[in-house]
Image (cartoon, rainbow, N blue to C red; front, side, top):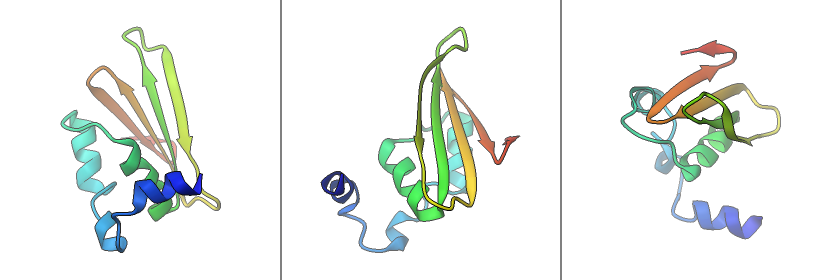
Length: 97
C-alpha cells in the first residue's frame, strides 16, 4: 500500500501542488459534466481535506454499478459523487448540490 500511495503522490512537493484538486471550481466542472473526477484527485482530496469521499456509478436505469469510498480517520465531511452517463450528482453532508 505504501508504494502505491508514494507512486500516486510523488510529484506533490507541497500542499500548494494539491490546490484545485477538489475545490469549488472543480466541483462546478464535475456538476456541469465538463470533467470527470480521477482516482488520484479523489484520493488526494480525501486526504488533504480530511473528507470521506464516495464515488458511485449508476447505469442507464439508475441501478448501482459500482461504489468505492476513500475514507480518512476523523473525517470532517462526507462527500458523495454519483456518476451516471455524462452526468454527476454531488452530495455533501446529506445535502444534494
